[in-house]
Length: 53
Length: 459
Image (cartoon, rainbow over all chains, first blue to last red; front, side, top):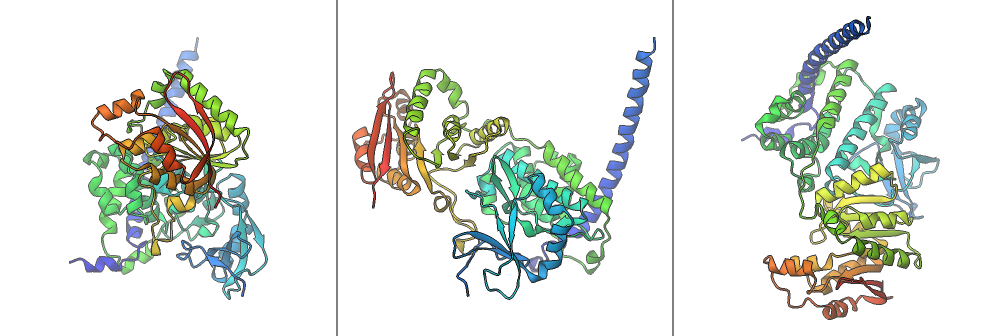
């Protein structure tokens, strides 16, 4: 029986998971930003090349 | 002590409550224990920012203790929302708009070093053609070292139902009715398909969240360190997740009704002409369109400056109407998913927190076009009962009677519907005559259909 579940503070169960999720998201957004930067940089080079006569 | 009535849904938040004063107007009392947060909310510029961006309902501050309460700090008089609706009556896109609005409110608050402490779906209402946040007391000073207190509530009230509808492509409004405090994450986890785990946002906010939230809290959890960036990332991820969700499945039997009806273009044009003609001779401010479908006639009413509640049991139709309203910027039409044969009941504590649809709906005009045969034949509801329910909603009635000889009714009867022997215009008029008197009657040419304008008997 999991009677103790009835006594959980509704918000608190989500505190620990929020910390974990926020950490994962931090890493995900970090790599996403790097990817965006590389893409941007790559398009800039390509555009430069195509504009050169 | 002044005579006031506290709103039955306003008891959870110790920061204040909504009440009706003896002048019949709804006010919100701010309690002393919320004084610091409320003063910060108004003085830091957040209130003005939210109102300017049409995120929060504006209020007027009244320096008078109307309740006589010892907890009184101040009284607010918010702009009155003419018709209250609930998340289980909204279509997918409406719930999505409400979710994004709630996140927007949190983001705006963060700019002013404040935070949203409640993320309930019931804190949002449909007003002037858009969703608007109504709980002025949901903003508190932000402790950036603490995780978001309303995170779980947001996931259960918004993210969970939207994710379920998105992944299963089924409208799940009834589930929201069963769980007014939000759909339990453990249930959502079991209902979501396996493929949903491969989406990072869905995995984190629903699957992982469900796994952790069923565990008992530990002492150390209370000291978990958070940061501003982490909070911003969390909100951004929720926002991206919700924006990626959609529900486009053609669900209902009524989808495409107008496309089919367009083949009978003359029929629609003539019906509109008759109604328009009648409307110009009546003084009507509010109306309900029952069986509104994609709102062709609701928009006709709205175009006549009539605040219109458009109801249909078909999710797809109401969602389409919502999209039309947004595209054309219609301000006075409220699209809602309501089944006439099973309208929203009163729910919550003492069955008073969220009132039933029939308790809420009081309008000048009731319009029921090409719907009676579906109720009487399709649902076996006697005319007397239909008449009685409609008469409780408003004083005028525009109703279309479709006889047994009509091809649509014939189709219903041929497709296995039980033959309803009582179904005749004579019996319809006799039953409705108990509640209404006929003011006008018009035949729709080239059809066997008749349209009536009726007035409720004066008591």
